[in-house]
Length: 323
Image (cartoon, rainbow, N blue to C red; front, side, top):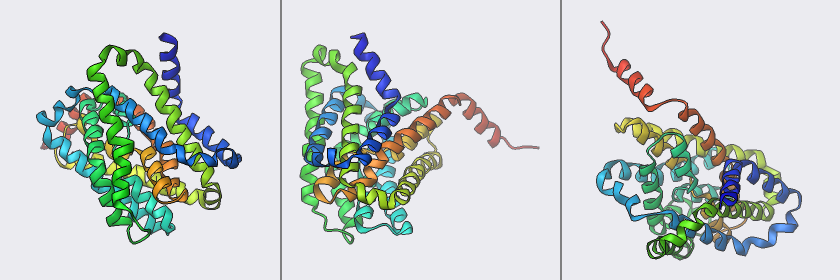
C-alpha cells in the first residue's frame, strides 16, 4: 500500500519532532496521560514483535563471518554505557531514582532505530543488525546483572523480576516475530511497511506516559537530566567509535559500533523503570528516546556526506612517512 508506506516514511523522518511535541503535550496536561503506566510494557512488546518480524536468520550470518567485530561491539555496549551512565549521574549529583534510571538505560540492548541510522550513515548495516539482535537476546541475562551491580546501592533491585520482564517484553515477542516471518513470509512482507509507523506510535505513547507520570520531577530538574542524557549518548557514540578505531575495525564498522553503542533501547528501559522502580527512574529513558534519535540523525547525515573511500584515503595519507 503506497499510502501506508508514505505515512510510515513521513513519521520515521519526523520521529524526533513528533516525540518532542508529544512530550510537551504530556508536560502541559499530565493528568490526561499519567494513568497509562500499566500499558507501557504492552506497547514495548508490540514494538519488539515488529522488530522480530523484520529479522531473517541470514541477519545472524555476520556472527560466523566476523565474530570479532560483533563481540567487540556488544562488549563495548554492555560495558561502556552502564558505566558512563553511573559516572555521569554521580558527577551531576542526581537522585537515587534518576541514577538507577541512567544505569538502566545504559544496560539496555541496542535500539531498533540504530539500524536505520547506520544504513543512512553508510556504515556496516549487517553488523548493526547483528549487534542489535545479539544484544537483545543477551539482555534478559546481562541487563538485570548490570543494574544489580551498578544501581543496587541506590535502590532495591529485583534482578529476577527484571529477568522475567525482559523475557516477556523483549525475548518472547522477538522470537515470535522471527517465527511468524519463517512460517508466513508473504503475509509478513505485506505488513512490513506499517512497522515503522507502529514503532513510532508505540515509542511516542511510552514517552507521553512516562513524561506525564513524572512531570513534577521533570519540571524541577529538567535541565539537569537533559544534560545528563545528552552527555551519556554523546560519550557513548564517541567511545564506540574510538574502541572500533583502536581495535583496527574499518570505517564502516566503526560507524556501526559507534551508533549501536550510543543508541539504546530506551523504550525498554522506560518500561522496566516504570514497572520495577518509579516514574522518575523512567525519565532518563524517556528523554533518551527523544535525544538519541536527534543525535543519531545528525551524525548519520554528517557521515553520509563523508564517503568511506575518502576517509580511508585520508588515513593512508596520514600513515605514510614524510621525508
